[in-house]
Each structure stands twice: as structure tokens, then as C-alpha cells.
Amino acid sequence: MAVTSAGATRADNAPARPRKNRTFLVLNIISIVAGIAIWWGLSLAGLQFPTPAEVVSAAWKMIQDGTLATDVGASLGRVLAGFALGSVAAVIVGFVMGWYTVARGLFEPWIQFFRTIPPLAMLPLVLVLMGIGESPKIFVIFLAAFLSCVISTYQGVVNVDKTLINAARVLGASDGTIFGRVVVPASTPFILVGMRVGLGSAWGTLVAAELLAAQAGLGHRMQSAQLYYDLPTIFVGIIAIGVLGLIMDRLLMIAGNKLTAWQENR
Amino acid sequence: MSTPKISVRDVQKIFPVGKEPFVALGGVSLDIGDNEFVTVVGPSGCGKSTLLNILAGLEQPTGGTALVDGKPVTGPGPERGVIFQQYALFPWLTVRENVEFGMRTAKVPKGERRERAEHFIRLVGLEQFADALPKTLSGGMKQRCAIARAYAVNPSILLMDEPFGALDALTRVRLQEQLLETWSKERRTVMFITHDVDEAVFLANRVVVMAARPGRIAEIIDVDLPYPRDEDMRLSPEFGALRNRVWHAVYHQRQIKEPAK
Image (cartoon, rainbow over all chains, first blue to last red; front, side, top):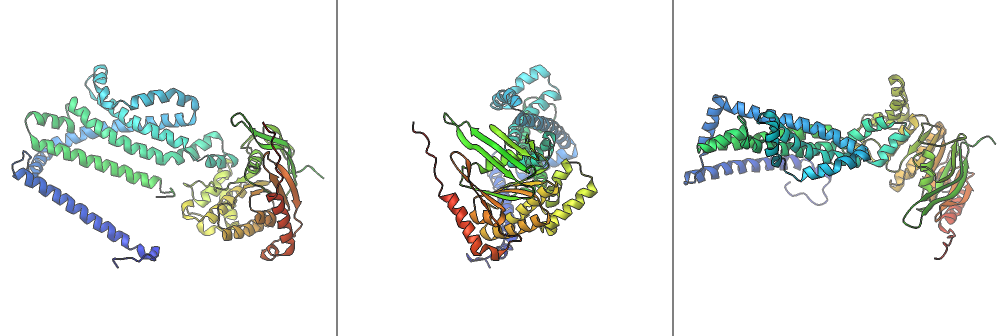
């Protein structure tokens, strides 16, 4: 039953979905394989690309001597530290801004101002002030995650359905209870969206920060490989960054879906 | 007569809109007796929801007083349960957790909380959906859950703001009958806002007809039909006559001419 009539009921349509998903997956795989084939073809045709085989062997070497693990560990450590600090701060500041008009008036101009500056543009200043250790990098990542997430959290608090707050009030809830049992859960979807954007932004900022100033990490590895014209290592770095970013985003998405499964229209 | 359960004394509500203030309520007085079922019907803008919100303690009057059990209303209180048109269930809580919400804020011990929630969930016929999330319920079921939630804190007054307004005609009629059934088992003082004349007559001891600009009471019509009420009653000539009276009072309202500028 490839063709479903217009009058088909929902139950009739239901089994079509997994099939559609499978088709989709097959297309995904075909696309990836074709992409690698084209890459291979181009590198054999004399373009200055390393072949996929060279990249894989470079990756294998980096796995065996432990450099990949060290770099990934350094990069992930920074991004997770900065992202965790940034998200926690964003949720707190966002809640305070949404709940108290005074705080909103005081915080808003600064947040709007710093939002227009790419966090990386703060790096030279931060390097001068904080030296070249871990703290400047974590700080820029913190800034990236915080600025992406704070507005979203604040919007979530402001957009909580007034009727829900009234419903809680007439059921005898105090301001504290309303905050904890209505405002916090109601704004969770907004916070999670903010965190996803924040994570993407943090990851992007991290790699760029490492390109500029680091002794380890994926960005640093690519930077030093550039000096030796070591293209396979650069490719390994790019692929590792993409794969790790994708995994973190998916994990956050799955956690988010679990937390907000109660939402009406999903 | 003893003190009325609800006593509204010359209540005014004026919203400052631009240069010309909007008079949502221009001096409304109304007494509602203990365990009485009063419906309030009127065109939009007649201030019926404002009146309910003032009694609920969600809005403050700009003049006059609203008394419940002889005491002025200063804010929401557990003796007044409110049911909203948009259901206002907490979507992240199950039916049972929604019904328990008010009892949790009142620090009712867990065992008693469970028991009372169970009782009211059964009363509105949702026992099979006690652990379901609101998103899986139909509109009518959501509103039944909201009714159970309001009942669970054991209020002596129920304030209902067009609770069946968003439902289809058939569900609406069923819920009206269920509400009367619930009310006959668990008597409360009810103030029920609606814009549906049939609904107003079917449910009430008394129908308060309001008019707009300024918001005021146009007429109060006694409904001396006996409870329990059912479908036959809805089709009876007595019901028809009352409905016509209310209809007339609502839709042929004399407009108070505003002074020319």
C-alpha cells in the first residue's frame, strides 16, 4: 500500500511511519558513503586533500599514542566546565530577571550589549587579564554559553501562562511555591532550548579559543599541524570536533525530550 | 435571613484606558445565599468575568466591597475554588497530581491527600485516567479534572468562569448534567459565568443577567424548577418560558447613551 487514499484513517497511516524513517536512514547512509567516495575521488584526482585512508591511519596513530584522547579530554573538559558554569549562571540570572522587574531593568542593558559581541572578541582582553592558563578559555566559553541561554530562560519565565499562576494562587500557593512548582517546570522547555544553543556556541568558541592560545586540545592540535603542513591531522581534528559536537547535542536533546514529554504539541 | 455567603456591595472596577476610563463594573450589588447555584450571563464586556475575579481575589475593585462570609475579600483563599475556561491544568502533572496540588500547598498529610484525590477523581469519573498527563485528555476530561482539583481543597464556594465555553455542544450538555450531579452530592455555593442562555437556565437557582457599558446587573430571574434536572426538563415548556425571558433580558438590552462630547 504505497499510495494511501485521502480518506485513509490515522490507524491506516500509522504503519507507514517506520517505513518512511527507514527510507530516510537509508538515504542518510547513501549520502555519507557517496560523500566519502567523492572526497576520495577528489584526493586521487590530484587535489591537495589527504585520502580517507590517510586520515584514518593518522587517526589511528593519534589514538595509539594517546594524543587524540588527551586533546579530546582537554577540549571536552574546558567546554563542559564553561558550559556548566554558564548554564547554571544563565538559569539563575534568567529566573531573577523574569521574576523581579528591578533585576530585569538592571541586567538587561548589559546582557543586550555583551550579546552583540562575539565571545571570542573578548579573548585578547581576557588573555591579558587572566594569563594563558585554563581560566581565560573557560571564561570565554562560559560567556558564550551564558549569553545564549540567559535570554531564553528569561523569556521562559516571562511567558509562563498567567492562568497557570492564577490557578496555583487560588489553590493557596505562596509566591515561593508558585515559583518552584509552576514557573520552574513551565519554563523548562525554554531553558533546554537555550542550553542547546549555548552548547553549540560554547563548542564553537572553544575550538577557536584553542586555535589562538592553548597547549593541548583539538584546536591546538590542528593549529600545530598547520605549521607542518600535516593535512591528515587537521582532518582528524575537524571530524572529531564535528562528531563530538553532534553527540553532545543529541544527548542534550534526548535529555530534553525526556524532561518535557508533558508538552502538548510535539 | 442570615448573612449571605457572598455579598457584593456597590462594587466598581474602572480600567484606565487612554483618556477615557473603561467602566467594567459600575456599582454592582448582589447577594448569594449558602449552597445557592447562581449563573451570571451577559454580553461580552459586561464585566461578568471581572466580578468573578474580584470574588476570587485575583483582582481588586476600585470601589465598593466584596464580602465572603461577612469578611472582605483581600486575596485568593482556600474557601473559594476557581475553575477557568482554559482548564489551567498543570501540564507536567498527572490528573492525580493536579488534583493533589492544592492539598499539597495546604500541607495535607500524604495518606489523606491520596484518599481525597481518589474520591474526587472518582466523583468526576476520571479514575481510569488518574495517572495520565493532561495532554492525553479531551477538553471535557480536562475540565472534569479541573473541577475535581477545585473540589479537593474543600472550598465552600466554587467560582466558575465559562468553564464549558470551549467545548462542543454535546460535551457541554453532558458536563452540565454531571456538574449538577456532582453538586447535588457535594453541595457548594456556586457562581457560574456563561454566555450561553440555555446553560444559565439549566444550572441555576437564579440567573443574573448583566449588561455592558457600564457593566451592571440588568435583571435577576429566579429559576423555580426542581432539581434533579434532566433532558426532559430542558425540553419542557416551563424551561422554554424561562429561557425566553433570560434571552430577552440578555439580547434586548437598553443601551445607556454615553454623553456626547
